[in-house]
Length: 368
Image 1 (tube, one colour):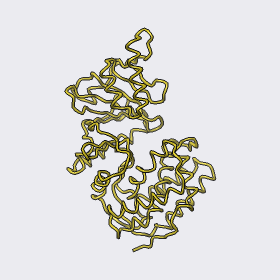
Image 2 (cartoon, one colour):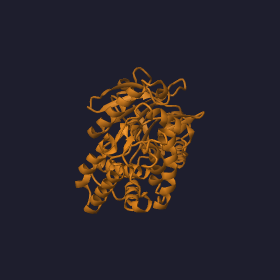
Image 3 (cartoon, rainbow, N blue to C red):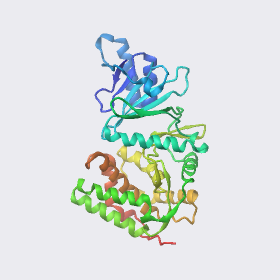
Image 4 (cartoon, rainbow, N blue to C red):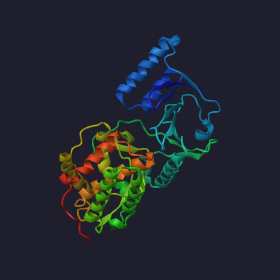
């Protein structure tokens, strides 16, 4: 099979079909940035008008394993997108439905270190699709297995192509309530899997960072334990990457994909905080400590709606934010094996940790 390569000079090329309408469909599916989408469509037009210029390089893959991932469906129109570079990088394939349906998507681990993420997402697609209230809002698993390269893969039905809501609203509330409800267990926070996971990963990644950062992380971890360690707080299932680019909204209903970071026992405010902070950090918006009290006020209202005013989550909001920031930092470092000080998320979240005295409420949540 042969494709044309778009964005070949970037670290995440998109291989599109040689047929122009199918290539445009691939751009519409994969590219959310309007400027990149415009640029891609312009290159396709110029490539058609000036075929001798060979503006888009061609890529040929022999023995392409289409049938293993999509069964008997036609390979025509299939496009390939390289995910974010790093140890968790995956190849994502989109196979449109010939009759105009949602089509199918496959993910292949490009490195052995990404196999675990593929297996993890497969597990959650199977588990949550048993819940009628949640299954209608997420992809349905089609096939799973291991390719000849020994890389894990799975395929799933594609989600509807709605819009990506940028503001947190009622549909977000309703979905996270459905997700959290199956596991409202409560116990001492420093005994919860969410805290133990953070504690273990923090100590495991300390050798990968310089001394100043090690002290910052250990101080933050100790502060979390001091503030809420003995408090009895609920945990819940978390999506783990609850962000606008992983959401689609149609007629007021929310659809979610990318379940590879889902956890059974998680920080009850993680998805809410992640939705509000990660887009700004990635876009290099100046996230200042002075903005955190406003966010914590919104988080407290969310916590009361989701878990009840007597759950203690609202009062623990500052410590939960501290937990989320450290959790994200250690996750990035554990995944990459080093601290990238140029990465906007790592740089921004580290600064918020350093400035925590400016926004962290001086309140210890007492055990009930």
